[in-house]
Image (cartoon, rainbow, N blue to C red; front, side, top):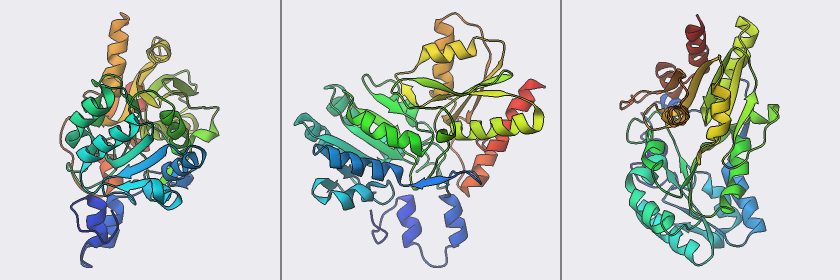
Length: 346
């Protein structure tokens, strides 16, 4: 989608809106998720895909009228002959990507998370997952990463997709993760779904001894007082909260990052939780059907009785509004994580 296209998607509506719409309000509704002081990288997915396309002529890019708003425009500019604009037809896009994969191409298809999951589920399931084709769905606006209300907030996307056989689900924390996931997804058998962080994406994991591996959870930051198992942008928030807790409250919080939600690294996560430390999960997703319930299931299967405190979105449709305000309201801000940890430790 370009800024001149007339459509009902959130970002294009913003760009095409009458001048009377307050610019400050619109910007706040699609604000960067980066906390103050955290460096960012512009369009890491688009640049990583373009670089992969240079190395592998099989790589193709598709989008459902959202090139600019999923960073696919970077790939389109670098490889126009391998870029396909499918229009506002997500089901068609997934079916076309499956056909491309069936003849040996490596497709990456982008749209918003709500459209990939709510509209195109059956096509992803039967056209890509059942025949185990390498169709890579890269979906922007996962969870609460837009202020445009329930029509664009994919708060339940992981819950929708977790039951699909042979689907790999990635939830990157930052630009470093995004850059590593692109070539890793291309090398896998079967389809992948990535909860895309787009635009100006935080870059924080390079401060730590961290390397992305498919299907592996990593202890990014050790800590003796409490442990938080996190994914996606909440790993950034957990790491920032850990810094505050250590500096201001002498509380050492361990952060375990799960960049892969399926298959899930139960062994690493359970080993970190089966201690006397106070435990949390943190996810940019409803607490129904996502990371919290994945962790709870892993503990129950191993007969481990351990209380885990979930930090996540409520089981309800969320408000529209300025994104920073919504993160405070629904408990995803860094300060909210700090407060939850201190409250549980008192």
